Amino acid sequence: AAAAGIPRPDPSQQHLRRVSCKAAKCGVAMAMRLLKRGNVAHALVRSVKAFEGVTKGSSPQREEQELMSEAMQVWAEMYLALCDRPKDEILQIRAEVEEARELDRVLAAGFSPAGGFCSTAFSPGGSSGAGAGDVPAAHQTPTVATLGGEKEENCNLAIKFLVRALQFCYSAPRRAELLVKLGSVYKLLGTFYTTTGRFTRAHQHYHQGIRVFQQIGDTLSAASLSCCLGSLFLTRAHAAPHAPGITEEQGTDLQRARALFLEAQEGIGLAPLDPSKPGGRKGEEVARDVRAGLADIDMAVGIGLASGKGQ
Image (cartoon, rainbow, N blue to C red):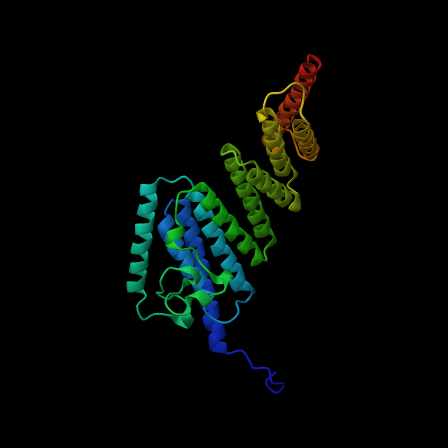
């Protein structure tokens, strides 16, 4: 290899990379455990340290990219855990992050193997000062300023990190897990936009969630989101100004709602409805929603036609 002009790998650097990977793996695992216990601040600091440990050197190798993906999954879970948290609790978490960073700097003073566990400031890219803005987007980490309690912002940040986590994930089971989580966040955002009266945004996120679940073959979750989207069109049809008969816009919304409920019904046919089987209870709930939605459409059409004839 050397004769051909290809440099040989430096054994010492390879060893340091392996050590950094092992340490990072422990750090990510600890971060996830801390997050499950509700310790957001220390989970964030641990996961950022682990992430920096595998992104400081040259182009990350496959194992390092997988660890980057796992850290990003922690951040996505963290943002979801922050949804609707009260302001005083968010401020407390931010203060805890600052305290944890300071403690880390004290403990890590003068210790930086292969640029791994460093005491850099907590900011995008995990670096501060000159050159911080040159950090690739894929290597950017969360910032303290983004820790808030707003559901919309947190869900969008969770989606951002889940999408990035998928880009660096090579494990089929983890990819499926990430996609399920991604579809669930789209559903959460869709519901949020529905309750706040933002039809277009709700439609976009329900539709994206359906596509994600269809991609992984989760027909039941896709059917559930089809019901949500059908209910969205049905609600808009009901909210139209009162007029004799059915307006063209109402008719279009009712047709779309019916198509979506029937699509959900087809998806249910591919899933178990027996409550004793995995997903069976959820299947029954979706089937109930489909029946209620179709009955509501039939009633709306019947009442609309009757009122139109009475004029």
